[in-house]
Amino acid sequence: MSEDARPITFETPADPTATLPSDPAFLQQMIIELLAALRETRRQNEELQHRLDLLLRRLYGPRTERFDPNQPLLIPDAFEPLAPEPEPSVTGDAVAPEPEPEPGAAPAKKNRSHGRRPLPKNLRREPRVYELTEAERRCPQCGETRAQISAERSEQLDYVPATLFVVEHVRCTYACPHCEGQVVTAGKPAQPIPKGLPGPGLLAHVITEKYADHIPLHRQERRLARQGVELSRSTLCDWMAGAAQSLEPLYDLMKTLVLLCGTIHTDDTSVKLRDSERKIKALARLWIYFGDHLYPYNVFDFTRSHKRDGPSLFLKGFRGYLQADAFSGYDGIYAGGNVVEVGCNAHARRKFVEAQKTDLTRASTALAYYRQLYAIEKQIKAELAKLPEDANEPTRAAIRLRVRQERAVPVWESLEKWLKEERPQVLPKSPMGGAIGYMKNHWEALKRYTSSGYLSIDNNVAEQHMKTIATGRKNWLFTGSETGGKTMAVLFSVVSSCQRHGHDPFVYLRDVLSRLPVLPKENLADLLPDRWSPPQAADPAATPEGPIADGSPS
Image (cartoon, rainbow, N blue to C red):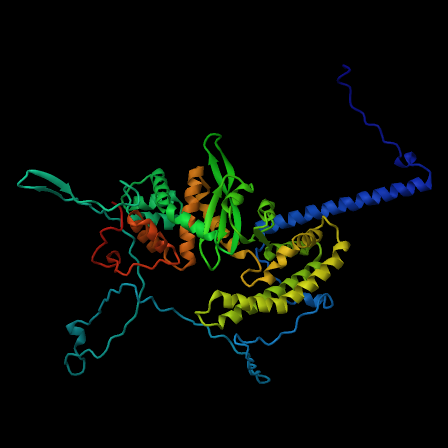
């Protein structure tokens, strides 16, 4: 047997206690070090378990952050709830108290409509009359023909698929019969895409399908093929780029006006960007800038990365409040002094929701404070709902500021005192320590909404629009190039702003794409979503007589 093939033998380790020192003082120091190492190991295990719980909850658990209002009863001494106060009226007069229900009486229930809702009156009706035959009308008793005395009516909703049609543009040419010359041809109105195949109606349809209904272009390609029109996906992409180029003046105007707002909400989300050179998909970003009541537009911006250069370049020249999350990329914007930071309390509250697994008592206390703050915002909305519809925004802002100063500021003072008491008692790197540290580091920004009636308690209005992007991202997956990302930002801006004002994106886009090529620049503001009004002329495409002559492909 060779020396390399000898069997492996294991030596029995010696008794570990034999190597321990006999000095009691040194042993005490070793025990202290071991206990410190054990505490650090347990802390790391708790942190890893917390991350694992968050991951499992994100994958399989409920997404709701709703807090049980009965939970604070477990810690009744942790905070003192605010007593409900009578709400003063807008004019300052006393409000008559509501009559209390009689003892034993059932609580009043809200009236909720049940059954089938009536169909819209603007839908085309096709009456179908059902009559009896002559034999069925004959009376079985006397043999006479029965006369009609009434009719029962019922409605049924039906559907006819959209139909493609071809618009033939005929340009008549004229010549002088005497001079045998002077030939002139009638002009053709400018189109959204010069010399392009699609008309404004088809472009509006494809844009609405993708950016409002989240139907990617490859599915639209199959849907168009079922109607007998073979269009490749690359052709549809070119159409989207052409439409975005046509809508770019309107996009630039909305961007300019949003930068004049007093308050802007912003947030971002990731979008996969295909790099054709390296054959990989990088993570780009899509940002939203949500304008206030002065210029209510949703403007999106596309950047190749998550660096601060994107918002810094977009917000160049902006002066006012910027409400966003605690992304460090905004710090340079706040440093100039022209932009004031407003924090998002939904982010701060969410950190206490995530800390419930490791510190239920403290998390429940913090969430109870936040429940009071959001209850005050709900009361403000109820107060504003009593105002007349023509009440201006300064009047509404004055009511918000008054109620917040009277009721929300005392809650913030109690919350600040509680945070100071609890912060030394928790580990800084624990979930609860991170939640408390987040609030202390951004305290002024989180509380700033109480000093102005034009601000919001959180940034949820921007985050909700990011969820819309995330829904579409699951369908169209990625953008093919940086140019495609810019196209996406323009079309999302127009569609989202249109929906914000309650317009049908298809009707709006079809009208705007028809008018933009021939509209003078000084009248561009008439097409802004808050100033635009639907065309008054009836749309023959929705009637049995036939389609309109300028609403589909050319």
